[in-house]
Figure (cartoon, rainbow, N blue to C red):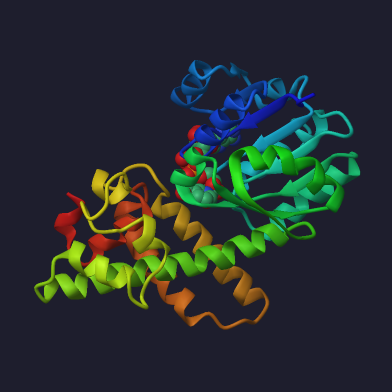
Length: 298
Ligand code: NAD
């Protein structure tokens, strides 16, 4: 029989992930601070709870998809936090991208209460969340991983066990540091071509079949109207907000500093996103294209 699931955090990623669980026949109780977010899930067949604790009532599995470490802390830790109110044996899967150290802190608190915790950040963007083709990058015990796998397989295509607690988050920030570099670099290359008379679509097609090929050119072109159904063709709305990319770059930079590892390209991407988010934090991260031509952002 399928476990009951509590799903907390129904934003750009959490909402379509939760919808895929409903479609697969899971019973879901959901919670989000935003009423718009919970309404969407109610229409899809979930029951809406008034608090994380209320959502977890009768749930054997809890999944969270929150913006950052501070939100994960506030949901799970402390006397009124969710962990203190869960029965032993509950499986908790946090898919937010947060610091590995924060994931380990929550995992330890959970383990003291006999609760299994996994860090399970994802890659694949909102397109992957909608299609159920996300990559899950999981840190935690092999036992908990085995329990989580069939559930994650509903929302994702590739499920990796990266290692112990925190390992999922380390792998995720390595990936996102590279993604930040690739997005900033792709925007820069397209701009160079456009300023020298090339059509952005023609140039993108050429680079896509040449050695500059990368994920942003494949499915997430940053220049408006080169691709359909991407944030750049929709006023840079939805998708992955620049402020969340900046959060991930900062996590990567912090990890690099703590462990004495050089990341000069990551440092440059961090600097670019830091400046960009001052005005454009809520726009999708491909809006870094607008650094080169502000009229693309209007
Ligand atoms: P989002 O801001 O769209 O969604 C976050 C949701 O959490 C919002 O609906 C918000 O109301 C809710 N929330 C915040 N605090 C809460 C609390 N205390 N209790 C309940 N709900 C709360 O963000 P997103 O794009 O869905 O990203 C979520 C996480 O996934 C982030 O860590 C992000 O870095 C990561 N991520 C995002 C993408 C992407 O493409 N958007 C891809 C991979 C990973």
